[in-house]
Amino acid sequence: MTLQVGLLYSRIRKDEKLLLTELRERDHEVTKIDVRKQTFDISAAPAAFDGLDIVVDRCLATSRSLYATQFFEAYGIPVVNSHETAAICADKVQNSLALEKAGVPTPATKVAFTKETAMDAIEEFGYPCVLKPVVGSWGRLMAKIDSESAAEAILEHKATLGHYEHKVFYVQEFVEKPGRDIRVLATDGEPIAAMVRSSDHWITNAAKGAETDVFDLDDEAVALVRKASDAVGGGLLGIDLMEIGDSYTVHEVNHTVEFKALDDAVETDVAATVVDWLEGKADAAADELEVTA
Image (cartoon, rainbow, N blue to C red; front, side, top):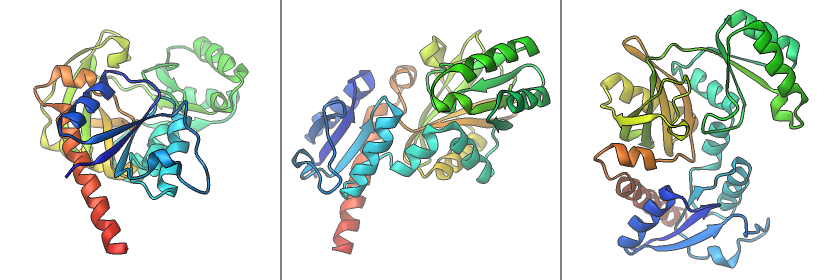
């Protein structure tokens, strides 16, 4: 079955090129939708969207992703990931609450709205602890706080920044991981592949230069990936785990996940496996439409 696939993007990176190549090799028709040039009408879908079987959201900007996914769902066009999943994953507070509610082990976290109450939270955790932006990726604007003076300086800096999100103080315990964390790419909770990201720096994101290598998931990790995926609504997700002794904690679930580093680290053809899943999602959506028609 030939699909008409919409690729919503703001920049074509290696990740998107891998997906585009795989889709076209299978003779699927691809409509590239540059979100920077697109307008959305509240009453009717643009003509460019006619006939689309499924849309893949690859927007870099969180705000664009959240609004665009709402529009596609309003137009009755299946989109991955869903707006619900995007909204939960895009906000670290919602992400942490969803994991906690589902019983997924996740680092202890406190949220405050003033410098004074944030300082109280930091003192309760003790030093070091971690201060993160509620929205953000690639390890940016994260701070490991090692002392009272550092905490005061960072809180003052954030409080003077203009955007309201900087006045939401997301404080988390510092997890003593063994110099690495684990990134798992999963589709509706089923792991495609996993890698470790190792670095001498406490932030072990591949975007920060961490070294990557394949990681074999044990049964506990697989179960946690499924549980974390269900907690945020499923989809194509990057689920980040840290090792704590012989167990794990899940510190984040990502919804517009990059996978180029994973593709380089593992033998699995990541793009091909993702497209297999997309074909299944599109078929399921078409079957559901026939039933409700």
